[in-house]
Image (cartoon, rainbow, N blue to C red; front, side):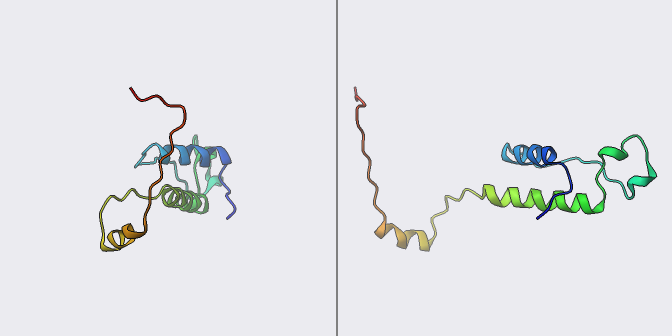
Length: 92
């Protein structure tokens, strides 16, 4: 995937998502040639689409915490083992 929007914008988006952002505000413009005070930092349709795809990828990378005990997890417990090794830690 080739990103047309600047890399620092993507980094800011990824960090914001990782920190829990649920709303992202970004200026949108139909045609940058129209000009205007915010045209240079607004995203056109293609760039906005790429930004949304990048956000969705970041969300997928973070995954989802799931503590629900399903039947599949219950069955896999019979094969699970935990090994804890403690070296040099004094327990009082």
